[in-house]
Image (tube, rainbow, N blue to C red):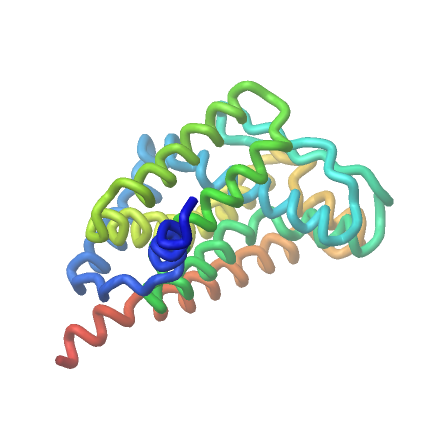
Length: 244
């Protein structure tokens, strides 16, 4: 690639896009909320939350010195991340803690990038993370899920006009922020019914001797806080538009 081509690529990746219309911020928030609240759309879109959930487990496992064995994503929107290392201790605790809060924290990081109008950069970071995760996927459905998701994000980032990129990025980030909260409530409902004795919260309870309800509450606190902070960042164009 020529110097001019590299310069163009650099500008495209790290350049600042125009402020999105305030109505786009409202529309994408409403669309994401509809997807999270409605049964059928949520059943499909929840796979993206599972990808972020298992990615969180995997990343923290690596950061704490554990050896990542593989990731599996299932068609029922469940997932499994296997790592090797000490079965107790801080590394295992942080690895288990990361799953339910990962979608919300990723959404918050995305909101921070969008607040600086780094829309294309956000999409390319998402592509890079998905490709890194693909290497560790160990089942067919998981491979298909990651490949399809990566292709969609890359296609939008490379071929779509700025307005479409903005709508896609804002919808995705709103969805991560809002969709990160719902699984915590679902988790406690399943625990109450005795249907998830091996949930992350229950494994944390056995490791730390702190009740599982505490960990569910911590998941909820972090995800709601991330939603509030992320919403504040995403609302900047809306507030600017109203004060002009």
